[in-house]
Image (cartoon, rainbow, N blue to C red; front, side, top):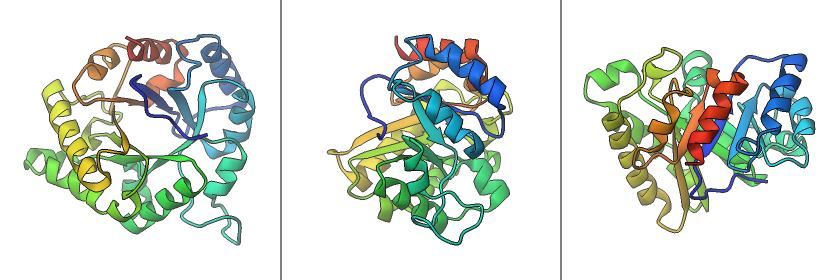
Length: 253
């Protein structure tokens, strides 16, 4: 079941390359016991090797299961190491991250690849969470808005006509650095992203623009109170039950 965009702020955790079967069980047990976390506007994107474990633990629960990447290839076939959208759907994924900056930077994902991944996710009713964001050099040069809007423009062909579009804005310079864009910077960029998405998909689409980049328990509520912020994408704090729960409490206010 795809993510639903509602007035409630979305809270999506990204476990990145972390986890173990024992740690996952303990973390999920604590999260599922809390109604503010075990809710349809909350999800966790986990490493592919743990999708079976996590989706089984979340079966019948409201907390959503997500993947961190999807193959640009369809269905099944001779693509060793790839995980298609159809395979993700089969194990119960509701959403998938697409184009995270770490994959763009370290694994060379291209616009062509991201377009294919988005297309494949939509085909099987998995919500792609499209990640965009500028490096520090673009921000310092005053080219940050143009940089991000060009990223979205490159995806126009696969976003046009979609009923639901979810974008996560993560300034690359604020991912895992402890730095966070200030409120004015976040509001300004989210406004531009919303306007660009309205141009691409129209007012009839359900649009959500999330903020990511060193989101933690002590800043999440303030970030989600900023105009145009429809939720958060949480990295390291999503691995700590106490922190992640506090982020979710902020979404409910």
